[in-house]
Length: 331
View 1 (cartoon, helix red, strand yellow):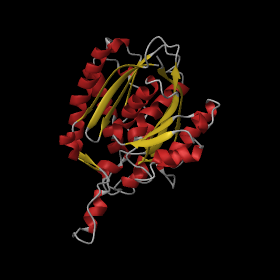
View 2 (cartoon, rainbow, N blue to C red; view 1 turned 90 degrees about the vertical axis):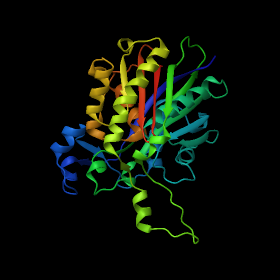
View 3 (cartoon, rainbow, N blue to C red; view 1 turned 120 degrees about the vertical axis):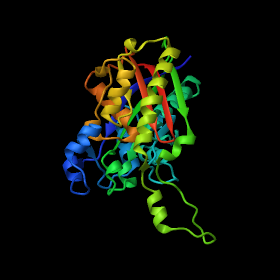
View 4 (cartoon, rainbow, N blue to C red; view 1 turned 135 degrees about the horizontal axis):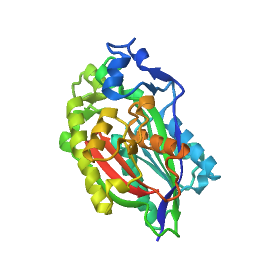
């Protein structure tokens, strides 16, 4: 049976870096206020690059490093909540840009859980035996949907993209995904929203100002934090049980990079050393679906994650939807 394996990881970021001090010139905030509450010091913000531009940079890096052309790909999945357009999809734009003529391509929208959901789907495509190779990319330009007057959201987010090349391995003796648990609770979805599409036609009255605000990220911070500290550790613990592994047997936990305090709390609830929870949010902020693959790419580059199938790694995403989910993987 074919088993999916990560054959490469890459990430791309806008060149423009915005510090906390710069944000204090736009709104009532300060570097200390942001750092002590979130752990974030700076973030990358687009100066014109759109989501497909960053995703294409990731795709090109992955192909170059693997000595492949786009024609070798069977599929491209882009996890994003900030696509260039509803159609064509961001994935279709990437497919065209890299010449992946034989690949089918689509976007997946699950907010900050997007990369985890997409990686799960890609694994099933390869283990079906029908597909050999594909890209899974998380890419966001969240600066498009930020209200830069709202310090409760504007200080949190950044732009970026990251992704992996997955290939079939017919000689593997262990699966890539050892256990998984993906969840959604739409009944709580209104606590974190963005880009609402309001009905607009000549036969209905609508408020233009309401439409403008609906496009921006709106968040009930307390509700989202409570969700994350309650439901996410439970999800991780239950997925570990499904894998017959303990937290002690996991080499690293790569969680969505939302808030350093949140990572502290989850590590404590799982009674696991904080050092196992990798973090880079101080430099990038919350990049939604891009946060985990950016973290993975850096961890591979700095040698923490070897990529030789000798390590067990947990990927956990959580965010708008509400969505959350965990994959326990052999990497």
